[in-house]
Amino acid sequence: MGVSDIIAGFIGDLLSESDGSAEVSRAELANRFNCVPSQINYVISTRFSPEHGYIVESRRGGNGYIRITRVTPDPERIVMHTVNALGCSADAKTADALIGNLLQSGVINDTAARLLLSAVSPAAFRCIPRECHNELRASILKQMLINAI
Image (cartoon, rainbow, N blue to C red; front, side, top):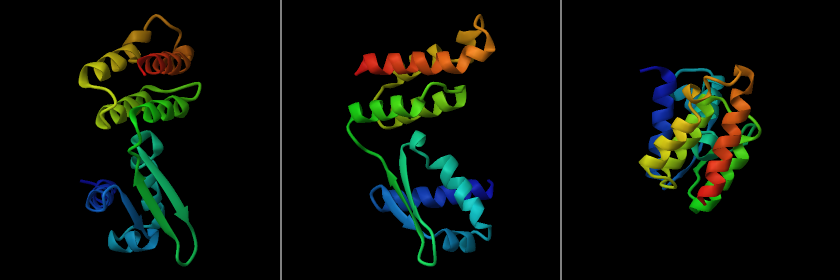
């Protein structure tokens, strides 16, 4: 297990213990895990992003902190947030993460998640020029989500 996994696990535990919101110091975490503060930034930006269902607030300086909050709004709001997060283009990894978040938050069930994943999978776009894949993936996913709510 790498340092990033250990840091992410620690932050996840903090969020679980505190009902979905935790405030941490970047410097304290870096000292605790014997790493540079940019490693903490990396973990937060890749594991605790809006696409993964989190809101991150940061204040820099001597008493700086990072506040991470697990988003738990109503299903309709989660879908609209997901649609807005998609933008005009989405690679397969981003689409998978967004669908996984919808499944984890209970907005969609396992069957719906599998259907969405199939519809936006790279295999579904075999006949389409590669340069169109990400735009088409975002459009299909948006339409499916908008029509599902």
